[in-house]
Image: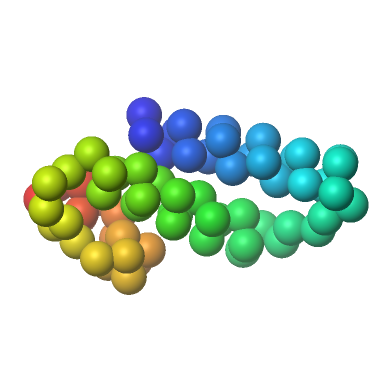
Length: 66
């Protein structure tokens, strides 16, 4: 659910950037933003970090299983 929320949230932010700020966002930038924001949200819920950002970027599923 959290990753799905991160996708919707970042798509919405990307849309607003394009419509209101004449911004441009590539798919790669959008995917990276989704990964980083979902990691930050997940880390904010935990007392200790079970994985680092580079691990989350590579294999988020493995981090969720820890």
